[in-house]
Length: 148
Figure (cartoon, rainbow, N blue to C red):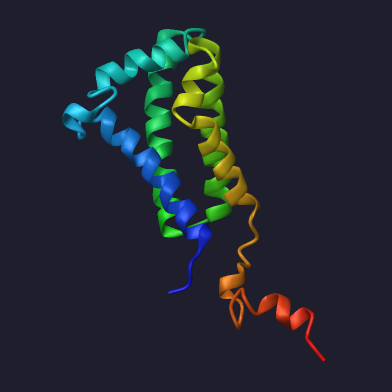
């Protein structure tokens, strides 16, 4: 099977988001950051301190729903570019909210900026990966600069 950096990126980004969802639902047990939905709602309220309480709760549900939907899209390869752009925006909003409410160190420690940039880089790829071309990536340059 040919190595595909796009596939690796899709799975890594999706797994990261699904892990966060599992944490909110208490599926990680003792290894959890939030451990349950109530703690996640409190954390969301801390990040969205500028919003009314009802919008803060809505943000928790919206973020979780989007993380599940976008993860499934990324894993399945369905509308990858759209899913990657939406994921990049979602993680960028999260990184900005963390920076404003908790300081710049928090999103750096949790690699939220990296996740956002990885999603945008995934969206920027055109899908024509060297490993998929006939002859593989090693022969690509050889075909353009043949020896005489």
